[in-house]
Amino acid sequence: MELQKILFPKPEICMAETLYYHRNHRCELDAPNSILNFRKDGIARFDTYFNGFSIGKWKKYTVLGTLELEIELKGAFIVTLLNNEMINGAVVTRVIHEETITSENRKDWRFSFAGFNQKGIHSFILLAIEDGSQFFGGRYFTDDASPEELPDVKLALNMCTFRKEKYIYRNVEQIRRELIDNEQSPLYGNLYIYITDNAMTLDESKLVSPTVHVTKQNAFGSVGGFTRGLINILDDSERLGLTHTIMLDDDIVLDPAVLCRTYVLFRMMKEEYRDAWIGGGMLGLDSPTQQIESGGVIEGGDYHSLKAYLMVEDISQLLFSEIEEGAKINAWWYCGIPLMLISEDALPYPVYFHCDDMEYACRKCEKLILVNGIGVWHEEFIYKPENYYYDKRNREILFSLHFPELATKRNAKMRLIKNVGKTLLWYRYNDAHEIMDGVTDYLKGPDWLVSFDDRSKFESLRKSRVPDVPVWDLPFTFDYNRYLASFVYPSEKKVHRLWRRLTLNGWLLPAKVNAIIPSGLPITYHLYRAKRILNYAVKTNSGYISEKSYRKAFYVLIHLSKTLWMIDRHYNAARAAYVKSIPRLTSSDFWRTRYSEEENK
Image (cartoon, rainbow, N blue to C red; front, side, top):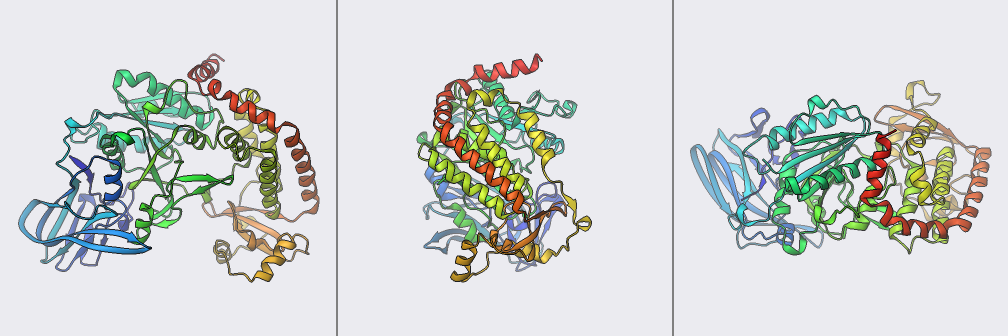
């Protein structure tokens, strides 16, 4: 049974070769034909993100017995099987097997990893010993388990989209071509696609297929779109034999082979892990060899991305990504969930937008499996606008539902002071008011939440934000090197750090400098005694200017004092109401009624 195909870079997906192999100058890729051509002494190593085999994870979670490698070669090579493992922070490389092979024509060669260390990553090296040698591809496989002996798995992809047509058309076309319509694919007859179009702008004629189901609805936010997809999948599960769903963001770049890997992993899962989720790592669209996140946890009221900003082209960082750190949450850019965990009375909570995936994972995910080679490319967080209102409102809801130790008046007030304090130090006064509006609306409780017009709120927030202007039109001298320096945490003497804190990062001192920072989350150090700040959006080469203002800060502090008073009065009642509302607001009856009412307007 094929477990994992050896992948090549593809122009339409990713051409970062070091995610697939490392080669010297005597080895070259024929990209249109997916062939590696070698001259004598050409070398290619496959201990990489997509082509290494995570033997430790497979042995822990699946019924895998022996592992074998099949590769198609022509010419003469020394083939070396490797195991890489991280021990006490050091990379330990062991040679499992080495063999010289020759063939005048294309030929499949098989090698076994049997009986060796079952931790870390297995991989292989090809060293050409004559000119004209070629590598055509291969796979990791096992003969221990036949498909007929394993549980049936049928996947339903659940996509929610809002005006991201080009991504949807491209991903669906690739999935149909390589998997759904390909009789050689293990997913042939085992894969369906469910799309909820919240903007009602998709051209369905480009998606016509008996395996693609499109539902159009007025915007209910991401949670309303994903939940509509889940309901449709549950309705079809018995008729189609669906067993698992994979939640997919609408703006990812996906290699369809990742779906095959997820499918096989679900099929081979040990009995005690049949209810496990499989999460996909997030790689950066603009930095494709950098892993932005692989799972996350909530600690102390903050969300922490795990295995963040690793350069997974490097074997040491790739092996570090293998180490499990107790991830409990995986975002819905790529998240596989067994349908046995999803029922008509346990659907997502209606938070409209943001934190919906966190809330559902906290309620339904007890086991999360993360494996190198299962991941997608997605726009980095620093390029996305902050959604302070929804982030604050929905995190307070999240804490009320699942973190009673965080859901106290004292903790809520401390979080608010911390959040507002940061925005004051960044001179983002509108963001401070947005945060406090989020808390005020949280305190109104779940009945208000489900009656609120989030669509209008989302649009008003978008319009109220300071618009970005091209940097050459701003009254500010832009220096790209200063912008890059704003990402660096500089070394700082203890005395200076203490002085910064005592003066509130220079707020209590006369302002004297201009600063350039990213429009996302900046490092506060770089704003010490700043007078004007250019908040720069690198993606669009634009930004906006924020300035130190005691008057605006005074109004923020007045708003803060009122919000803290409201927390004292209403927090306990709101928290109890949210907890009590879970059965009602996560039921199929609630969601179907919402959809029906909207359709009948």
